[in-house]
Image (cartoon, rainbow, N blue to C red):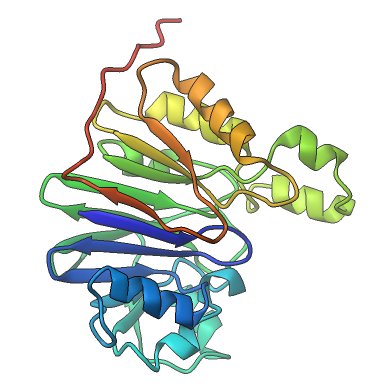
Length: 265
């Protein structure tokens, strides 16, 4: 399996998951020119996407969808809540996903997992090809047993690490927005992300991608250090995903797992 992050953050989100001849785009929040260029660079010409998955209807995840559909005839899949929210402003043919129910898209087994976020019916996703599992959760106000089960056994885990609590508290956001970000349907902090990963990652995890970092309330070194410290020595490689620019790539054939020091106390 191959995974490419084209962008991650409030200005746009887009991830490409590939296995053999199967090419699935997760969210379409980058400019269509960028999307077409990066897809072509990875062997995906116009009208060769197998499917477009939508995690939820917020603009940073669907901004380019209308334009992209001019170049890709792929099915667009989302939950019923997401489809209902999108149909009022994006005309497309949609297929409904049910949280917890896996579907097969070419060589990929795809399972949507319900998350807590202030959208109609948002989900994260688990992708499986053979023995390889990838878990992607980019917008969620908290983690639960479903998310924990999803990351168990994943070789690559993509998880939101949106804000540093102290930076958010000191920042100039209005109080209502700070409450929304911190709330159970908002976003995941560096500390919460790190604590969750330390408790639930398995030895099969080779890489962690920290996603959806806030431009105003976070810094990549701060997010990365928080998670690395929590995981301890010998853990998976930890990367922060950029808001835009050079894509980040992962290939299961090149990933290796490393022994991890157990937390005994």
